[in-house]
Amino acid sequence: MKNLFKVALVAVFMLATAGFAKAQTKIGYIDFNGVIEAMPDLKPIQTQLQTYQKTFIDQSQSMQAEFQKKGEAYEKGRQSMTDAARTAAESELQDMQKRIQDYNRNAEQQVQAKSSELFKPLSDKVKTAINAVAKEKGYTYVLDSTTTGLIVSPPGDDLMAAVKVKLGIK
Image (cartoon, rainbow, N blue to C red):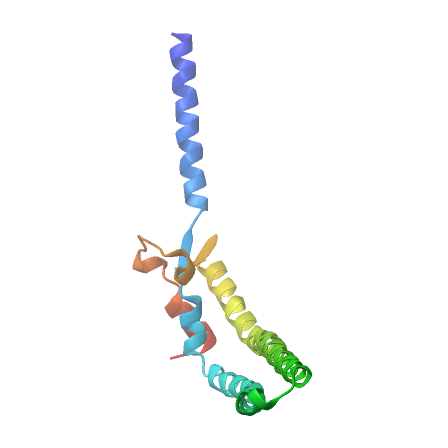
């Protein structure tokens, strides 16, 4: 009888603890990129990034055109070149191609860094609003629905509308 009482007491305690833990945890979700895309601050940032990127694209295209021109000249004159001249021309073309690849890689890294720099304040602003809304509504966790692929997501736990209101987005 005592053992039955102890088991029942432990079971009641476990159920009470599980119910308490469940009441403590509230999970919401939001489409983080959707909020960013809805912000009016996004357009000037995109324009600025495109302008920055265009300078690299123009230079890369110029380098590619020069490479192609030298390649065509090499192909036309290759038959009449000496072995030393042909080797030198081929080496120059290979070096030029490597410089173009290095330039493109470096340009891509610089554009990525600039993108991070430009989007960080916007991202921070959205995160601050999400944190504020989550705190106001009692959410312990907020998931980004674009990265988690939620299978079940009750509309009541979608914080998109509340965060848009917090940010002043219509």
